[in-house]
Length: 241
Image 1: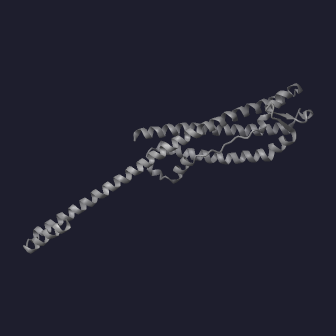
Image 2: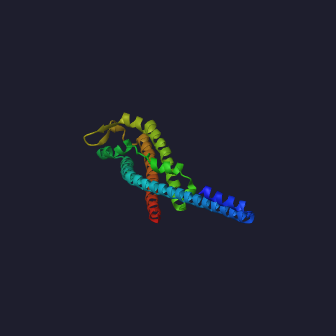
Protein backbone atom coordinates (compact mmCIF):
# COMPACT_ATOMS: atom_id res chain seq x y z
CA UNK A 1 0.00 0.00 0.00
CA UNK A 2 2.83 2.39 0.88
CA UNK A 3 4.64 1.53 -2.37
CA UNK A 4 1.42 2.22 -4.29
CA UNK A 5 0.99 5.73 -2.85
CA UNK A 6 4.71 6.42 -3.27
CA UNK A 7 4.46 5.49 -6.96
CA UNK A 8 1.55 7.89 -7.46
CA UNK A 9 3.53 10.73 -5.88
CA UNK A 10 6.59 9.95 -8.01
CA UNK A 11 4.47 9.95 -11.19
CA UNK A 12 2.95 13.31 -10.27
CA UNK A 13 6.41 14.79 -9.69
CA UNK A 14 7.81 13.34 -12.90
CA UNK A 15 4.89 14.88 -14.84
CA UNK A 16 5.60 18.26 -13.18
CA UNK A 17 2.15 18.25 -11.60
CA UNK A 18 3.37 19.77 -8.37
CA UNK A 19 0.05 21.36 -7.36
CA UNK A 20 -1.73 18.03 -7.70
CA UNK A 21 1.12 16.37 -5.85
CA UNK A 22 0.76 18.87 -3.00
CA UNK A 23 -3.02 18.37 -2.80
CA UNK A 24 -2.57 14.62 -2.90
CA UNK A 25 0.13 14.74 -0.19
CA UNK A 26 -2.09 16.86 2.06
CA UNK A 27 -5.01 14.52 1.46
CA UNK A 28 -2.82 11.55 2.28
CA UNK A 29 -1.71 13.21 5.53
CA UNK A 30 -5.33 13.91 6.44
CA UNK A 31 -6.23 10.28 5.80
CA UNK A 32 -3.35 9.13 7.99
CA UNK A 33 -4.44 11.50 10.78
CA UNK A 34 -8.03 10.28 10.49
CA UNK A 35 -6.79 6.71 10.65
CA UNK A 36 -4.77 7.46 13.77
CA UNK A 37 -7.76 9.19 15.41
CA UNK A 38 -10.00 6.23 14.61
CA UNK A 39 -7.42 3.84 16.03
CA UNK A 40 -7.13 5.95 19.20
CA UNK A 41 -10.92 6.11 19.53
CA UNK A 42 -11.18 2.34 19.21
CA UNK A 43 -8.40 1.89 21.74
CA UNK A 44 -10.06 4.32 24.16
CA UNK A 45 -13.39 2.56 23.68
CA UNK A 46 -11.74 -0.78 24.42
CA UNK A 47 -10.07 0.63 27.54
CA UNK A 48 -13.32 2.19 28.76
CA UNK A 49 -15.16 -1.05 28.10
CA UNK A 50 -12.55 -3.00 30.04
CA UNK A 51 -12.82 -0.53 32.95
CA UNK A 52 -16.61 -0.87 32.96
CA UNK A 53 -16.39 -4.66 32.96
CA UNK A 54 -13.82 -4.54 35.74
CA UNK A 55 -16.06 -2.19 37.74
CA UNK A 56 -19.06 -4.50 37.26
CA UNK A 57 -17.04 -7.50 38.44
CA UNK A 58 -15.88 -5.56 41.51
CA UNK A 59 -19.43 -4.50 42.34
CA UNK A 60 -20.68 -8.08 42.09
CA UNK A 61 -17.86 -9.30 44.32
CA UNK A 62 -18.64 -6.63 46.93
CA UNK A 63 -22.31 -7.66 46.97
CA UNK A 64 -21.31 -11.31 47.43
CA UNK A 65 -18.98 -10.34 50.27
CA UNK A 66 -21.64 -8.28 52.04
CA UNK A 67 -24.17 -11.11 51.73
CA UNK A 68 -21.63 -13.52 53.23
CA UNK A 69 -20.61 -11.35 56.19
CA UNK A 70 -24.03 -9.80 56.96
CA UNK A 71 -25.38 -12.83 58.89
CA UNK A 72 -22.26 -12.80 61.09
CA UNK A 73 -22.71 -9.11 61.91
CA UNK A 74 -26.44 -9.57 62.55
CA UNK A 75 -25.77 -12.52 64.85
CA UNK A 76 -23.25 -10.47 66.82
CA UNK A 77 -25.75 -7.63 67.08
CA UNK A 78 -28.43 -9.98 68.45
CA UNK A 79 -25.95 -11.55 70.88
CA UNK A 80 -24.77 -8.14 72.01
CA UNK A 81 -28.37 -7.07 72.51
CA UNK A 82 -29.03 -10.07 74.75
CA UNK A 83 -25.85 -9.26 76.71
CA UNK A 84 -27.21 -5.77 77.38
CA UNK A 85 -30.42 -7.32 78.73
CA UNK A 86 -28.40 -9.57 81.07
CA UNK A 87 -26.36 -6.61 82.32
CA UNK A 88 -29.42 -4.43 82.90
CA UNK A 89 -31.16 -7.22 84.82
CA UNK A 90 -28.03 -7.76 86.92
CA UNK A 91 -27.93 -4.07 87.84
CA UNK A 92 -31.63 -4.10 88.74
CA UNK A 93 -31.15 -7.18 90.94
CA UNK A 94 -28.22 -5.57 92.73
CA UNK A 95 -30.29 -2.45 93.34
CA UNK A 96 -33.00 -4.57 94.98
CA UNK A 97 -30.55 -5.82 97.66
CA UNK A 98 -32.42 -9.11 97.84
CA UNK A 99 -30.51 -12.30 98.74
CA UNK A 100 -33.40 -14.36 97.36
CA UNK A 101 -32.51 -13.16 93.87
CA UNK A 102 -28.97 -14.58 93.92
CA UNK A 103 -29.81 -17.47 91.58
CA UNK A 104 -31.36 -15.10 89.07
CA UNK A 105 -28.36 -12.80 89.43
CA UNK A 106 -25.97 -15.68 88.80
CA UNK A 107 -27.84 -16.45 85.58
CA UNK A 108 -27.68 -12.87 84.32
CA UNK A 109 -24.08 -12.19 85.35
CA UNK A 110 -22.88 -14.26 82.39
CA UNK A 111 -23.38 -11.06 80.44
CA UNK A 112 -20.34 -9.70 82.25
CA UNK A 113 -18.16 -12.48 80.81
CA UNK A 114 -19.10 -11.88 77.17
CA UNK A 115 -16.88 -9.95 74.78
CA UNK A 116 -18.39 -8.66 71.56
CA UNK A 117 -16.68 -9.20 68.23
CA UNK A 118 -16.51 -6.01 66.20
CA UNK A 119 -13.78 -6.76 63.65
CA UNK A 120 -15.04 -8.08 60.32
CA UNK A 121 -13.12 -8.97 57.18
CA UNK A 122 -14.09 -7.19 53.97
CA UNK A 123 -10.95 -7.61 51.83
CA UNK A 124 -12.77 -7.17 48.52
CA UNK A 125 -14.69 -4.03 49.48
CA UNK A 126 -11.79 -2.38 51.32
CA UNK A 127 -9.33 -3.29 48.57
CA UNK A 128 -11.66 -1.76 45.99
CA UNK A 129 -12.12 1.44 48.04
CA UNK A 130 -8.39 1.88 48.64
CA UNK A 131 -7.19 1.11 45.10
CA UNK A 132 -9.93 2.62 42.95
CA UNK A 133 -9.79 6.21 41.73
CA UNK A 134 -12.92 7.90 43.16
CA UNK A 135 -13.45 9.69 39.82
CA UNK A 136 -14.26 6.34 38.21
CA UNK A 137 -17.33 6.00 40.44
CA UNK A 138 -19.84 8.37 38.83
CA UNK A 139 -22.59 7.53 41.32
CA UNK A 140 -21.84 9.99 44.14
CA UNK A 141 -24.29 8.35 46.54
CA UNK A 142 -22.53 5.03 46.04
CA UNK A 143 -19.14 6.68 46.53
CA UNK A 144 -20.33 8.25 49.80
CA UNK A 145 -21.67 4.90 51.04
CA UNK A 146 -18.36 3.19 50.26
CA UNK A 147 -16.43 5.87 52.14
CA UNK A 148 -18.82 5.68 55.12
CA UNK A 149 -18.52 1.90 55.10
CA UNK A 150 -14.74 2.08 55.34
CA UNK A 151 -14.90 4.71 58.12
CA UNK A 152 -17.29 2.59 60.15
CA UNK A 153 -15.09 -0.50 59.87
CA UNK A 154 -12.07 1.55 60.93
CA UNK A 155 -13.91 2.91 63.97
CA UNK A 156 -15.12 -0.59 64.92
CA UNK A 157 -11.51 -1.80 64.89
CA UNK A 158 -10.53 1.01 67.29
CA UNK A 159 -13.57 0.42 69.48
CA UNK A 160 -12.83 -3.31 69.60
CA UNK A 161 -9.35 -2.55 70.94
CA UNK A 162 -10.85 -0.30 73.61
CA UNK A 163 -13.35 -3.01 74.62
CA UNK A 164 -10.71 -5.73 74.77
CA UNK A 165 -8.44 -3.56 76.93
CA UNK A 166 -11.30 -2.71 79.30
CA UNK A 167 -12.35 -6.33 79.51
CA UNK A 168 -8.91 -7.79 80.18
CA UNK A 169 -7.65 -5.01 82.46
CA UNK A 170 -10.78 -4.31 84.51
CA UNK A 171 -13.52 -6.90 84.10
CA UNK A 172 -11.58 -10.14 83.67
CA UNK A 173 -9.52 -9.81 86.91
CA UNK A 174 -12.75 -9.40 88.88
CA UNK A 175 -14.60 -12.28 87.19
CA UNK A 176 -11.61 -14.62 87.58
CA UNK A 177 -11.52 -13.88 91.30
CA UNK A 178 -15.20 -13.65 92.18
CA UNK A 179 -17.16 -15.67 89.62
CA UNK A 180 -17.29 -19.38 88.92
CA UNK A 181 -18.40 -20.54 85.48
CA UNK A 182 -20.79 -23.50 85.20
CA UNK A 183 -20.60 -25.35 81.89
CA UNK A 184 -23.60 -27.48 82.82
CA UNK A 185 -26.01 -24.57 83.23
CA UNK A 186 -24.10 -22.06 81.10
CA UNK A 187 -24.15 -19.61 84.00
CA UNK A 188 -21.71 -17.97 86.39
CA UNK A 189 -21.91 -17.94 90.16
CA UNK A 190 -20.68 -15.48 92.75
CA UNK A 191 -18.10 -17.18 94.97
CA UNK A 192 -18.64 -14.74 97.85
CA UNK A 193 -22.39 -14.23 98.16
CA UNK A 194 -22.09 -12.43 101.47
CA UNK A 195 -20.51 -9.50 99.60
CA UNK A 196 -23.35 -9.29 97.13
CA UNK A 197 -25.20 -6.42 98.77
CA UNK A 198 -23.81 -2.96 98.04
CA UNK A 199 -21.00 -4.40 95.91
CA UNK A 200 -19.76 -1.14 94.43
CA UNK A 201 -16.99 -2.73 92.34
CA UNK A 202 -19.38 -5.17 90.67
CA UNK A 203 -21.90 -2.40 90.05
CA UNK A 204 -19.25 -0.18 88.46
CA UNK A 205 -18.02 -3.00 86.23
CA UNK A 206 -21.56 -3.80 85.12
CA UNK A 207 -22.14 -0.14 84.28
CA UNK A 208 -18.87 -0.05 82.32
CA UNK A 209 -19.90 -3.16 80.41
CA UNK A 210 -23.35 -1.73 79.77
CA UNK A 211 -21.86 1.48 78.38
CA UNK A 212 -19.42 -0.27 76.06
CA UNK A 213 -21.99 -2.81 74.85
CA UNK A 214 -24.52 -0.09 74.09
CA UNK A 215 -21.81 1.66 72.10
CA UNK A 216 -21.19 -1.60 70.22
CA UNK A 217 -24.89 -1.99 69.42
CA UNK A 218 -25.11 1.55 68.09
CA UNK A 219 -22.11 1.02 65.83
CA UNK A 220 -23.32 -2.38 64.66
CA UNK A 221 -26.71 -0.88 63.83
CA UNK A 222 -25.02 1.77 61.67
CA UNK A 223 -22.88 -0.87 59.97
CA UNK A 224 -25.87 -3.11 59.22
CA UNK A 225 -27.87 -0.18 57.81
CA UNK A 226 -24.91 0.93 55.68
CA UNK A 227 -24.43 -2.60 54.32
CA UNK A 228 -28.12 -2.77 53.35
CA UNK A 229 -27.94 0.63 51.61
CA UNK A 230 -24.62 -0.17 49.96
CA UNK A 231 -25.83 -3.48 48.58
CA UNK A 232 -29.03 -1.88 47.30
CA UNK A 233 -27.21 1.01 45.61
CA UNK A 234 -24.69 -1.34 43.98
CA UNK A 235 -27.52 -3.48 42.60
CA UNK A 236 -29.19 -0.35 41.23
CA UNK A 237 -25.92 0.58 39.57
CA UNK A 238 -25.53 -2.91 38.09
CA UNK A 239 -29.02 -2.69 36.60
CA UNK A 240 -27.88 0.37 34.64
CA UNK A 241 -25.00 -1.49 33.00
